[in-house]
Amino acid sequence: MTATLDGATAAGTEVKEISLAQAVNRALRDAMTADEKVVVFGEDVGVLGGVFRVTDGLTRDFGEDRCFDTPLAEAGIMGTAIGMAMYGFRPVVEMQFDAFSYPAFEQIASHLAKMRNRTRGKLPLPVVVRVPYGGGIGGVEHHSDSSEGYFVSTPGLHVVTPATVSDAYTLLRAAIESDDPVIFMEPKRLYWSKDQLSTTGPGVRQSAQIGKAAVRRQGTDATLIAYGPTVQTALEAAEAGAAEGFDLEVVDLRSLVPFDDETVTASVRKTGRAVVIHEAAGFGGTGAEIAARISERCFHWLEAPVRRVTGFDIPYPPPKLERHHLPSVDRILDAVASLQWEDR
Image (cartoon, rainbow, N blue to C red; front, side, top):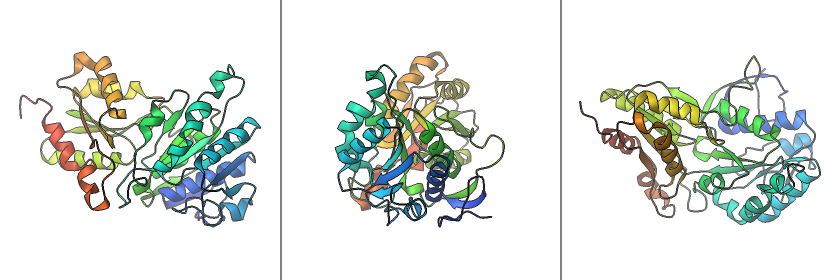
């Protein structure tokens, strides 16, 4: 039986060749089937099914009490989610585009992230905030931001971002089941990427866990550390680098908070060199924290300073210029070539 977005699926069904957007839909659908306390809401997520059709069919199949539209008021969406979580629900809310989450940030930073600590553990808030983010789709500012840095630097939040169809499903199921708030960053340009997905079989649900990175490509010369939309770019750079004699390892972080120091440290200690890649601006970005952690834990193994390949320190550029702003294969290989090679 093949899964579709029309509600014909059932939990446990084998799924073949679906998109990342469909995998997110499937995770929402299976979570809503498994737990009646899971509710989905946000701008246009109901009848329309979301601007990217990620919530397609959920209102029809689960009713307007389980998946519903809200006013265009992100702070109100977030405040409602916090209130519902306090009364036992597991809300999954959508911020329609990355920068649309900024009006909700006060609720996220002041209440969502702090409630468990504020109540000495008595009141956890199991809320998932879905944030479609990143560039590469020809969108304008407010539609192409990479806002993960704001959430990563806010204690009390988990922050994850899938780069594959399988991870989109398993990470979102894990996020919904978590008793702590999770910011679920969805790379927009990967929504239409396709791959095989199975939701059955031993170890499927453990294949991607919050707090666990994945080595996507083995290598010995340098480690490319990426997440979300830049993982595919890093893999392309590794393939192109092989033609130039570089054997590059690629680590997909998947989880920014908690951070998987063990996997990253093991990789960099093996290769001795590291390049961190992300779309957000470099100054004060997540890559700065990653580079610091590598320097602290791998100093005696490093053959060269950790390099970063990031977006420029500017507001997101117009669509026709974004190809210059986003990390590219050439920029990554330039960084690799600068890692103080004595024999090249």
